Length: 236
Image (tube, rainbow, N blue to C red; front, side, top):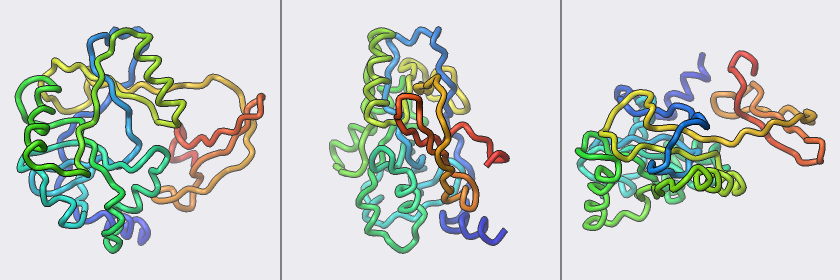
């Protein structure tokens, strides 16, 4: 109980859970030609309500003042991120209440501008107009690429996965802003169907401290994989 309290406290106080859009899973039979795609960043969701920076769960973050001093007076939604495969470090930076200088490694990649009119690209253009007048290096709009074909989608996915990225997100650019789990916003991940031998169980960190974090496996061709997702909390 004490550990849980400390972890929650390290994220700051609760400001009320924001009403955000959530992703459904992509079905290969779905036609998404004409939609836009972007890399699914494995960071911490950061929602700026115009005054405060919050997590998806509504916990108030405490970035240094210089980090948010040029943030817009309107809401933006995105991912606090450094680089691929760096989630634990990102989480550590965001949780910290002391090492403010570490925030210099964080970039806020914005993929939504809530409550604005028009489709997705029009909403994002609202932020672009603001940033043109108020440049903020650590505040960037996540690049959206139009899907030209199913092969184009798969090629982009392969490119991201090859670079050890988490996956991609496809969204219908014509829909107005909505919240909740949407059929117009889908996550696409690469799934491997193969057998492997478990070499080692690796300890967890953060909310999985004292539990299993991931397993190190080896496939028949000798390739080693670190698998940390797909496990239920009760199984850890």
